[in-house]
Image (cartoon, rainbow, N blue to C red; front, side):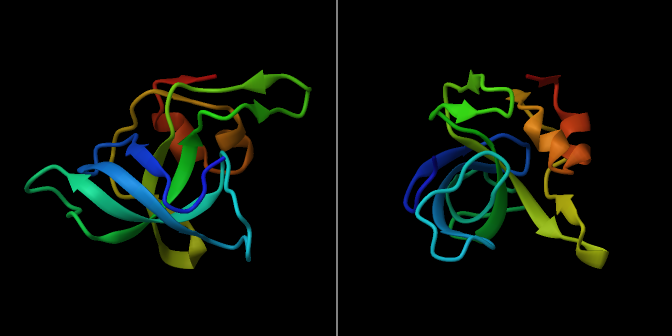
Length: 126
């Protein structure tokens, strides 16, 4: 359950460390976003001399959230942190990753939603 002004960690090696959610993409006037949703973020902390800088506005895919996430089979999954992966639009509407590595576990719902490249780069699917 990510809402506006929530602080998230970056789960890839794009150079961003902390991001702040500033909006939701394609959810209209929604109050919350959850695993698998695309959000608009502002970078609050970044590593020096990397691809993204502090203050940049980017799009991100939520891959972990602290709030319990209900799966289709009725079980729940939750993580220790709120985390996302930075993305950009490629040709033909496909999404491309800004970084080329992903850190930490990724839920299998990400693969089911069609983000197979992210799921393949992840060290473990939960």
